[in-house]
Length: 359
Ligand code: ATP
Image (cartoon, rainbow, N blue to C red; front, side):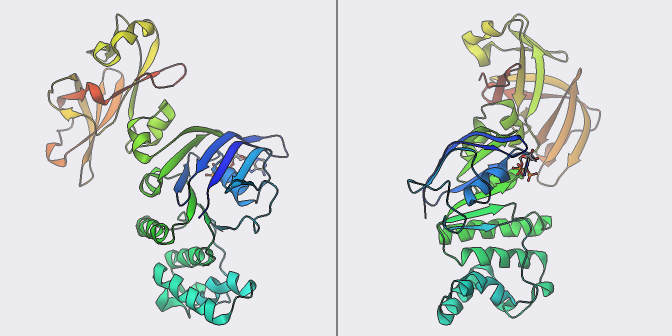
């Protein structure tokens, strides 16, 4: 287990593209960190700089207090699992998992003991004599993970390790990865664009966009206290509803509904007079019907999607559209006029210009 620190780390590719800007993060021993963000935001570049596969253009990277910018991947003692896990097709599962140790000249009996233990953790015991072609995608992925964890390094890096699996396998492997982390306890950095993977696996999540860190926090912090519109919209499914509107007399209009911002903004409301703000609320943070200390909104139901454990209700009020997540037993009729309440405490307000949270 190791402590990692990245200080003002930047990546400028040889073609001049600035892919990562001033990345700052301290990772505690044994922590499970997830880098998340849309395609091209710089997640893999940052991970590759940590792995030593990509030069750090400026800034410092330390492992246990020692600067390692110039060290190669092997000297950093990191293990990495990639999106595309090339297994050796002409080697059995046993030999694939053992490969790194065999190269290091580790004794055969030690190799055997470690391979059997790794295979047990990963549920591969019955497949050790098989060749990769006779395995499912999920099993191959587990062999790739086994090949990495067998090295017992302090730092474990994973770049979208589940991307080649189907939805069901991803869920199974996700819990297996969490289990492996609990057992092995290695400091882990995991890259994904899937917010569910990020939320379920991470101790802390780093949300990135366009090469910039947007927010670093626990899943709970990111969900309840997003710092800006991007993070608020990225975490949560369906995403947070946003309504952009101009403040007049301390109020905004949501179709025919007049929303008085004073209960949410208090004294700050005057500072936003005449400016545009973003009014946000999560689909699941509403109540059907009327409630105390809440905005009452009248809207029309455009569409409902019954998903089993809940129903997504698409509503429109004037020009504004929103999604509500309700108990399936309360699913309204299509085209019905409904009233729903947004408790003041569940409202997020953002500055429309800076996109930063106001409240
Ligand atoms: P994805 O989820 O699609 O893998 P990512 O967040 O991991 O995306 P990176 O692979 O880190 O993104 O790429 C970040 C940015 O850097 C992208 O705009 C990409 O086009 C650019 N980039 C990556 N490699 C190079 C390179 N060798 N030279 C120039 N630009 C690069």
